[in-house]
Image 1 (cartoon, helix red, strand yellow):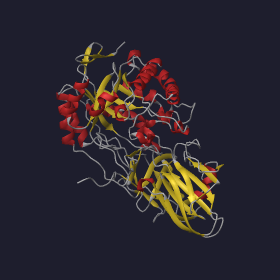
Image 2: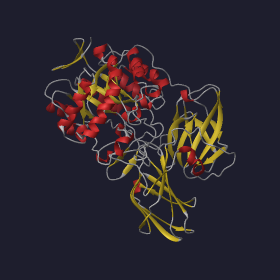
Image 3: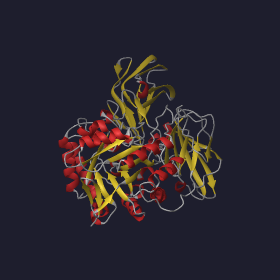
Image 4: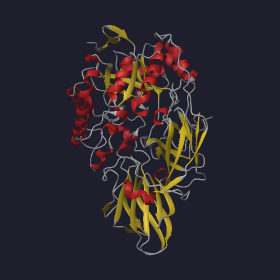
Amino acid sequence: MPRLEIAADGFRLDDRPLRIISGGLHYFRVHPEQWADRLRKARLLGLNTVETYVPWNLHAPRPGEFRLDGDLDLPRFLDLAAAEGLHVLLRPGPYICAEWEGGGLPSWLLADEGIELRSRDPRFLDAVDGYLAALLPPLKPYLSTGGGPVIAVQLENEYGAYGDDAGYLADLADLLRAHGVDVPLFTCDQPTDLARGGLDGVLRTANFGSRVDAGLAELRRQQPTGPLMCSEFWIGWFDRWGGIHTTRGAADAAADLDRLLAAGASVNIYMLHGGSNFGFTNGANDKGTYRPTVTSYDYDALLDEAGDPTPKYHAFREVIARYAPVPDEPVPAPAPKLGPLAVELTECACLSDQAPLLGPAVLADRPLTMEKLGQSFGFVLYESVLPAAGPAVLRVGEVRDRAQVFVDGQPVGVLERENHQHAVAFTAPRPGAGLAVLVENQGRVNYGAGIHDRKGLLGRVTVNGEELADWSSRPLPLDNVDALAFSPAAPLAGPAFHRGDFHVEEPADGYLALDGWTKGNVWINGFPLGRYWSRGPQTTLFVPAPVLRPGRNEITVLELHATTTRTVEFRGTADLGPLDD
């Protein structure tokens, strides 16, 4: 059986030298009906390998549950990779970062107030053991030792940027081996973290996007023999709401790839194809200020968000051809796109009216976090009663992450974690006025100590210094919008759902523009496209062709504030925002 060997002078497979030339492709960020297309384009680029993370939080949405089907059918993805003759680097975490919600760690871990993630805490390791016990046995035939495409498995992910407990890494390695992983393990860290994040006996690899010679030199200093590999060669970057669209020139990135390959190193290009953070799956960063990541994970990658080859793809193909065989086949042209199509949303449903259809209320003496409610994504609607009429100041210990405040149904303010806001002033019209606080989880922190990121209203909630004691906490995960009851006429002000129909002759990829809308989420035929926000930089949402059907289609928009129009528009090109000069 073929087995990847880690020799003093490099990788070997079937006793032949192997240079890994890989590209990042996350199956969970791509519609499953488009996996084969992206994998074919990986092969045509000249890659011999693809890399993917595994998001624990999607595969195990609740304790004791595990999914490996539909859009999470990892075995099918691996079959398709093998059909293209591609090896696979599998990165199961348990922590993956990936600018993904919570770094891939399931939110239900945080229901335990004292748990220490990414540590030897028995509560965490027991949960990891259960995850790997569910994930790995079905993947055993896909390891190269069983004739499959997976040639190596990553141990944790950039652990040196978080901790330095080699015992924790050793425990994880033991769990991987106990659950059947018999291919080589590897760690990956940024050059300055290689010593902290490595484990003796496990191959170290480095992550960087520039300063190639310095990165490889540090890797060689930490690991005197063995293959040199950059496991994340960053060729672009991700965007945050309120920022700019980050890009990297094709010539600059290709020149650094040339330096890597000329040095004899193996490489995983991050990303070959970024895809999309569909639904509520984007992560966030918090280095003193909370910054949620946008819906697009275009990453200025070799294949754009629709999977079309970019100039950078062709530049990289030319470089790779100097060092490895590149298929003598034409690269596919960009796929057809939906033409301009305006859709009027003629029906509406106020969120406050629909709330009982979307989740059951839980009564308590304080607001309950999402994690205590057994909820991962979406919103929580908190309700209480104001004790007196007159001027009032609502103060919240922590808002995670964005709270819209209403009194008797009227908006009185917004509190944003990003802006470090904790209080809002208003006038209560009467004793017993209804207080409602709609809190959005904008993405759990995916990097650094902030991964212990519980959502909702945290800490004391007071009005004029007095703590409110009676609360209703209603989870609104919005994982199914089919139950909504719409009516023909409704206000343009939100929070409200808007719905409309449209027809297409032949499904094709497209981009949905929401000019005149403020902030919210979109579904097409029940498929969650993701978040939009007039704050930008992203102003269009990618629509994969497979979510459409010939003939009638349905679009649902949740607008949290207000819109100046009832119309949205499909376009043939993306608008990911202004670039950095």
